[in-house]
Length: 276
Image (spheres, rainbow, N blue to C red):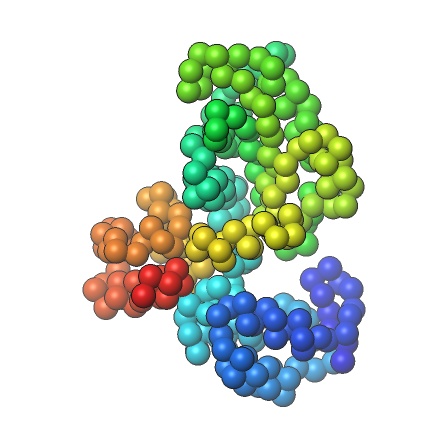
């Protein structure tokens, strides 16, 4: 059976790929097999991957809110837009979980011009800039022009004293982070230029997806028991991660949730970050 991808390409339907993505949600083999059976009875020649995703998400949500939330991770990260401001905060949280000191929305004076920096990180006395490239489009990739441009900014900032933590700080490293993917040329150029990349699927074993699953760094936009407006209100309150909600019902009260809804949200949040 042929299906239509977001890119417009037509490919063969792969039940094994769908099964693997469903298993990563935390659903059991038995649950996934039942879901696959239901899906395969409803799909048809030429169906889009978007429709299959919606079908799978709906079925997972009926079985378990937390499973659906995990399955919805990529879309949840996209919901940190459209401007990308909350994506920058989310990336800062990821580095903080790995024992970096972090600062967001910082301005540094380079040799030639000043630069607005998305995130600054420090660990073991090494300071790096982190540039975040947020894409609303599902298939939008960061091509080679992105690391080429950011390298020029990094070169203007490095080897110059800055007043950040002390008056003699040096910027010695540079990261580029995107919620989607980097092109092959972008990766090759970054490697050659000694720039660090982080995307949805890169590096292979230490990317946004694996960091989330390993360290339970799910954004609040994952939660299926909240409306889009309620998620936005939490982001404005600087509640970025699901784990920041656990044992903290005050932020849910502040956005106007009833006691019964707070209970449901906390249940999903606890299951999602495995604090049970």
